[in-house]
Length: 68
Image: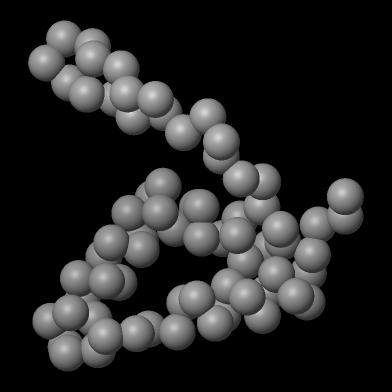
């Protein structure tokens, strides 16, 4: 859903998925604080395409899943 407020477009994801485990929660925190974009920018400058965050997230979700 997209809402127009003043001159700004706000996007709302009503189908926000629930975190499967610790890895999803850490990813959410790093995106909210801007750490993820900083790491991506530094990696781009250094010529690194994949920092391994996805694999790390999956392993943390596997080791520390949230109970349903």
